[in-house]
Amino acid sequence: MTEPYSEFRVRILLFAETRSEAPDTVHALGRRMHALKVAARRTSLGKPYIPGTGCFGYSDCNRMQGYFFSNKKYVGMDLEDSQRPDLRVRQRSLHAVVSRIDLASADFLPLWVAKESSAKAMGIGMRDGLKKLTLLEAPRPLGDSESVFHLGYAGQRMESRVRVLGKHLMAISYLSRYGVPDIRCSLYS
Image (cartoon, rainbow, N blue to C red):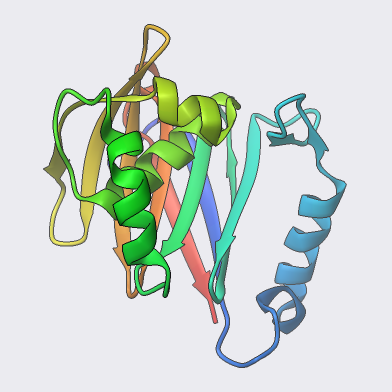
């Protein structure tokens, strides 16, 4: 996910479970990240933040936790397990809702993580995110395991970079006006 140098930076720490313990009990760094998650303040719509930082966020799903820091304010992250048992049921019940105002089409799960991370970036929550985030054009591949989604919300243009990480999908979303981010990702297992 690393692009040429940019003043817009995103640092991601991923913790994958390899045993039955939760990832934040496996690593000292994971414990510190979990402590930040617990200590973070929240906006009225639940977006976490740490005073004095650009942006802090997290996401977790089956056997993986992710935390990020950015020097820009409107950044969001989502992780999803592509093999979750209820995925087909979710797709049948939610695909029409997720894509009802889209101007292009995309596969359900990548579109879901792009929209969820965008909703988190804007701090609007999924209920409003599903109603108001619009996929503006077909996703553009960036190699074998990553695509860029262009979304619109309230006159703002957003980008969401969706990457396949084994059986997980990870999305990082941000305002397009920030430019191409310098994204660095570290995986701990």
